Length: 419
Image (cartoon, rainbow, N blue to C red; front, side, top):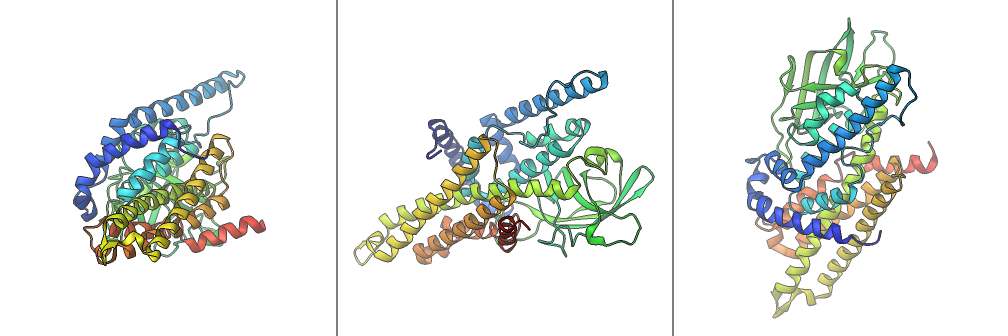
C-alpha cells in the first residue's frame, strides 16, 4: 500500500463533512470540558453505520463461538477454530478506522482517545479473554457506544511499571473475590458504564508481591464500594475525560473474572495487557498522522497568506525549512501507517517491539511538527484562537500516552536483544 484507495478518499471526504458540521462548531465546549465527547461519537457511529457494523461483526463472532461450544457439548467434531476475538470488533475495517482516527485526531484528538479506549481496549479485551456469556453481556453495548468502557491498569505508584508496582489486589472470599485499591489516569474513568480492572491475587502466602498473578475483572458503574472520581484538569486532550477509580471491598462474583478462571489459556492478565499495549501503540501512529496532516495543512495555508516585509512568509528559507521537515514527517508517519495496515491484512501484525518503535517515532515527530507549527504562526500560534495551539497541547500527550516514550525505548531494545 503506497497511497489511500479511492474508497478511503471517499470516506475521508464524508468524515471531513461530519467534522465541519458536528465537531468544529463545538471545539471550545469540548476543550473546556463543558461538552462530553460521547454524544458526538454516537452521532458519528450512527451516521456512518459504524454502530451497525460493530454489532453485526460481534454477532457473527458470538454465533461462531456458540456453534463451537454446542458442538463440544454434543461430542461432535469442531466446526472451526475457536474465535478469539483478538482481531477486534472492526477486524477487516482497519483502513476505514485509520482514516477516521487520523481525521478526527487532527481536529479533536480527545474524541479519538475516548472512543479508542472504550472500544479498542475495553471491548477488545472482553472479546479476547471473556467467556461467551461475558461477551454477550457486555460487548455489543460497548462497540455500539450505547455504553462507555474504561480500561484500568495504571496506578499512582506504578506508572510504567504497571505490573511490578501494582498494588490493587483481590483476595478470594468463598466463590467471590474482594477488590481493593486505586487506579489513576484512567480515560473515560469518570463516566464509564463498564470498567476492565487489572488486580493482583493476594493468596495470603506472603510471597513476592511483584510476581503475584494478575487477574482481569469487569465492573459496572454503581457497584457498592466502587467510586469514580471527577475528571482531572489536563494540559491537553480536554475532550477526553480522565480520572481516578477507587475500590473499597468491592465484591465480585466469578462471572466478573474474565474467562471465569484464574488459569486462562492465554496466560494471566499480564498477557492480556501486553496484547492491548500493541494495539494501543499502533493506534498512536494513526493519531500522530492526523496531527501532522493538520499542522502541515494549516502551516502551508498560513505561509501563503501571512505577509511580512511585503511578501508571503513562505518565501523565507527558514519557513520553507519547517515546511519541508513537516512534509518528510508526513511521508514517514503515513508510510508506517500503511505498513501496519498491510501487515494486518496479511495476518502478520507488528510485534510489541515494532509497535513500540512506531509509537516512539510517531509521537515524537508529531510533537515536533506541532511545536514548529506554533513557532511558524508566531504570536498567533500561541493564542487559543488558532488551532495549532490546541494541536501542540494534544500532540504532547502522545509521548506519554500508551506508555511513556522512555519505556518504548526499553521495549524496542529488548525486542532487538531478545531479552
